[in-house]
Picture 1 (tube, rainbow, N blue to C red):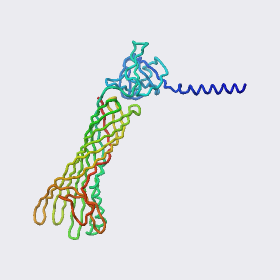
Picture 2: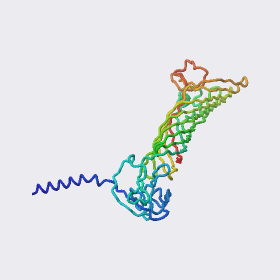
Picture 3: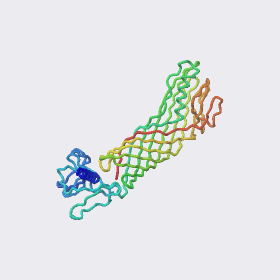
Picture 4: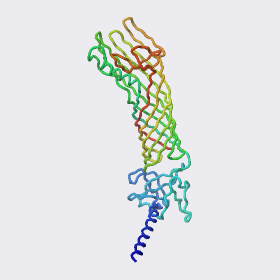
Length: 396
């Protein structure tokens, strides 16, 4: 008899375990609007933005109740998007409660499901992750950007180290230091085509720039010089990329993007030297294009179905090489005014003094040949870096 009872208990437990997966099915409700001109809000809050106004008699599907609010799925718009919002319990009544097995979003029906037993009532819409129809978007953003810069910064640091460690002039006779270029600003705009709501193809353009002026006063045994340098680096990227914006919650989307671009880079250089023997100014300017790559990670916060605030971190990889441009030196010395120049290339090399080597860049018609130079090559400007930007995304 005891064995029989134990077997019955075991059998009952087994049945309960088998039925547990069935009980995990999501309970979904169908609610009917009973108050005319009922507001559907972006968030479950009476002060939240109204995203739709419904007439009495409209039937919607609700998957969740948040306090006094039902989360409902509105009918698709002209592009097929199903918009989610919240409606207060006092404005609706439950017309049917049933157990509906969860279906993967990508398998859910696209077209509305019309209640066959009550054809006179409004259709019930099933939410779907993917919808047909093409829509468009525009994203405008801006912020701060960081550029590596590369050889030019190495040269400024090399000069600073040289003045500190190997300067042959008066001890302590250097005031100031060359400033490295890193931080600037970055603006961009993108036109986006959405073949499906969460996937977009973007064509964009932007503008990024860094510049930094610095002055060094160098004292020597027979006089002193003031040297002021003012370099500026800018780029216009023309980009093509892919956006993926999966939803994270009510009104919030993740942003993932990647793509390639053509970077039209420009560098201008100005150096003024004011000394006891001469005063002159060196200027040089070049424009160069290169291929690069970019990507971003960020978030969208929707104000409405068509407008969202965007914040994202963006990274890029691009280098400008083989840089040649117009160089000119003009000034006066003890013999009078002078001016000369031509097509000069920006070169990188390491200068030796007292067995130490210091990176430098400057402009020459041909590859510099000097016994104190090593590792001579054409200089590069590294546009690689990152930006932190904020802006707005519009859908239409």
